[in-house]
View 1 (spheres, rainbow, N blue to C red):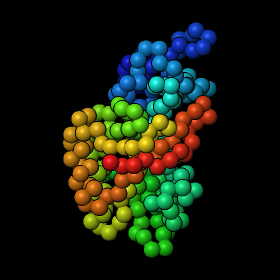
View 2: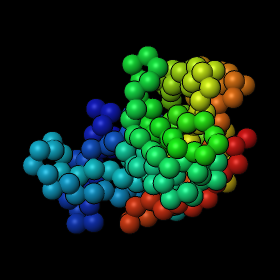
View 3: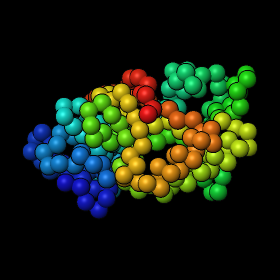
View 4: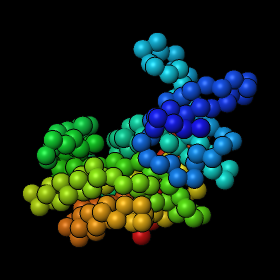
Length: 220
């Protein structure tokens, strides 16, 4: 059971009930049903208020990563390893670079031999309402729309701007915007796409060992 937005009660295999930190501010549609299998990490850190952190939930037999702290790291490593064709050739990556109106870009990529420096925004995706299809967002995200408009400005300034949707589930092959969940984000997405902002969706398989790069998804 989830409550106070970032708290979730989970029954362990031992039968004990623990309260874990839920590092996901979204609605997590379809994932919070009673009895859903969960993966948690014991933190073993006396400075933390809660002893466990929720990492993934099972939906239709597949693990779905819900920890929003993982995607930035996973995409950073994928770019550094030259695994994303659209972003190969960059020799320097800088996380959390300040830009725009009091914002930070997730990854700033530079050092390409012929392409402009790239502002790369990473979005966590876990929503799937039909088989094989991933969607974002699962609730209103004013911050997400703000980022898209700021990326438009970067394109107009001469930089590349790329949004990478990190899909933390291996059972999807296509991706699109969930316009019914946030019409304003849908409008910002359309404006950004028309302005030259690039959009990529990448699927990662989740297991008890963590995230594993899986495949690119078709962006509809």
